[in-house]
Image: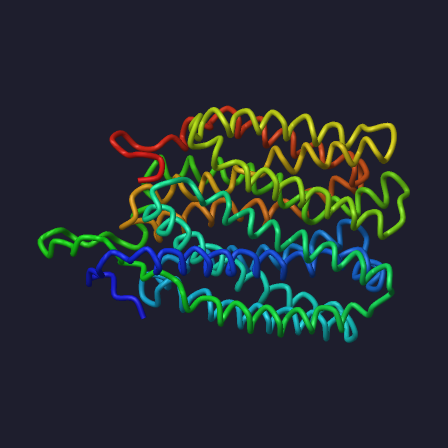
Length: 404
């Protein structure tokens, strides 16, 4: 377990390398598990005979679990450390996915329970792996957080592509999700062994300095504004995750496998943006790069919604994925600019950001009942416009380097 009152020697280069590798495993495993579920949303919808609004409420259970977990994540990580938090949440997520697999056969109530567990595990896991990512980024002395998120996106691409193949092969939903549940839990628990200690390289705290309250970060204007920035990008990313396949199938009358492929294209574009983004961030800074990408995301979502043909909609999905690629990781890095308070601030920022996952699915679903799901996606462009207006908040505090 992690004791934040005890300083730990700075990690050696091999330990940092192991930390990088383990952090990639945590991010990729999380993405693979989520996309495996998301790739099966159209089949679950059809099997349970859900309307868009009903599906939105079912998806709401994921966000509800996450929103409950996120405020608790900071104190939990402070006590257990990011390594044990990720491992425990990987096991819980496996239980959640297995419950969804059973619920697909039993009924909607069991599916909702499983999705709630999945969301709870994913929320705390998300904060813990971002705290570890920010710590490793600081020890490396260069931007790498976006590449960790690229690892997440790569996991989602793999999960979506495998899902598309299994959909085309008519593989049972329950068998698919059960195998993923066991595999992800086992691999991620093994992978966290290389995590860098959360207190590594920090000076021992001065006993005369008052201890910060666990809720202190909720009173910091910069932290709250970063949370709003992340919320806008989370809404844009989450809408793509939850609705892009359904919108392609319903709006463009595409086959189910084509809808899943559109989801995979969106995720692939986001992965590319996150992999090559760190170089842009190091050269041009967070604010300029993210503001430009917000504009790209706005153009992409509008093209996806109003394209006259499916191929152009796929082009819009590419721009949409590129545009939202760096918002979430940049927000996490900005929240962790001061490592001693990183867990609390990242927890707050993630809590605010995940409100998009709480309100996004039902909002798009209800709009979809009146405008069609495809037209409802225009809400993404509005939120990205708000994010573009407040990007200055992710600049490092005075006297702080963006990676040091």
